[in-house]
Amino acid sequence: MSQFSRRKATTLALLTGASAMLAACGSNGGILARERPDEFAVQRQAPLVVPPDFNLVPPAPGAPRPAEGTAGEQALEALFGGPAPRSAVETSVLDRAGAADPGIRSTVGDPQTNTVAKGSVTRDIVAAPEGDGQYAQAVIPG
Image (cartoon, rainbow, N blue to C red):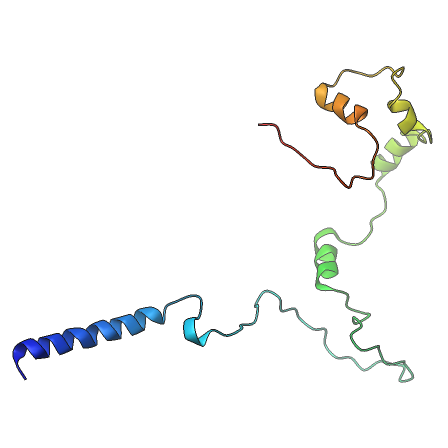
């Protein structure tokens, strides 16, 4: 075998090896693509506890555990806590404000009602036709 043939064979072997190693770095999985677990979807399970009453009815298949709730409910509870009583300031403000007139929304849309000029956006909102919101859209003027 000549030196040129050896050099050619060595170059071809190096290129093949480098290509194989580079292909292994692919993020889409290539030929060996497989489903992987979502590590962010894992949640801790509550520890098993023996109930004090052994005459309990077994849960329905697929029903959530009653003492636990969903991950979303747990996140809301951790972020905002449970329902809290109103503070003294909030109670005072609500007492001073009094009860709203049941027909206040009809009065606001009446052209005879005196209002403070808040600009064209407020006029557009008040003048908007009633509807079920099915075709509503939000547009940010540019």
